[in-house]
Image (cartoon, rainbow over all chains, first blue to last red; front, side, top):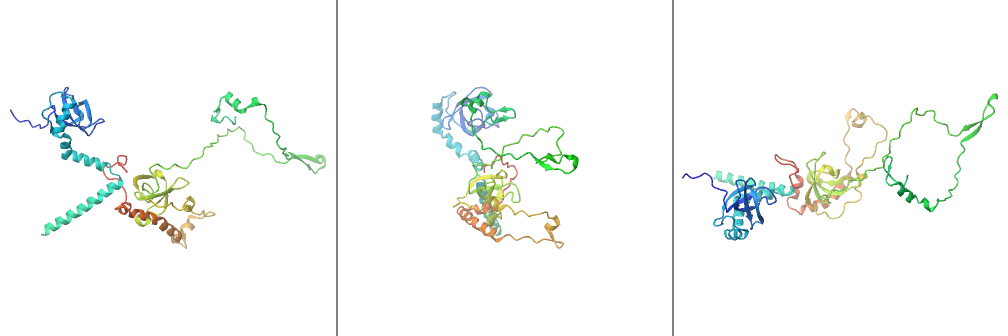
Length: 137
Length: 237
């Protein structure tokens, strides 16, 4: 059998990111696949209630839980999710951190944006000076 | 009816029975003796010359106008509404940093001091930081930011609308007279020293407040603008 190019699959135990709805931006776990459009997701550790969700509004993440039986209840999923530390794993990922950074930047007020501009200027200056020094040496 | 204020011409606020109740005629007619005002006589007897003119004649004291409109003209309804001064936006409080959007200083970040009676906002640069003097601006042309300075003490009462109005020049002057003198452009009138002193006095408090926060001085000095992909309704101020 040839290796597939796909790395992430819709499967029970797959951690997904919700793109729309009241829980947008949170991650949940696929508990059961309903059909080729929807799955039952559950996020006991991320306060996402058990519900059916269209794949259209989900993004698959590289994180996957093993050892969850098909159609497992909230309690069972919580146990595995806590053991595997899904929330921490997600929050530590570069993807989640970038999302948080974008969110943070967006919520800054005018003075905050100006302060970022100043800080970036200073960083640029330091880098430029260091590069100049390194080139000379 | 005077009691039943008109909602639209011909329709009163109160119903017929409500008006009757308010007039209170069931209590009996009100009697009040007004002091008799002597009405000036409508006509005056004047002596007239000429034999066949009867010697005298009754002449009205006030002459009737010679002109009258041939057709009845309907009187337009008088509006009794008067504009109220604008209420201050809740996000604007003394010490709030505002972004000016119109006028000579558009894009500048300034400090709000107080609202004047006319509803205009009194702002200052401060002048030393960004060159914006004490100035009145309309709050419609202003973005209020969430950055606030902690100003100590209220602004002097003398800074009111009258402070900013120019004295009216009497009589008509030609444009030539206004701008030229002996064929040369007129020299600019110097700003009275009292103005610069006032500016300094007001800015002293503001500058002291600016010093308390790092980078705030630079912030006020820089001007605001939108870059590519930025939309004011999506930004947080």
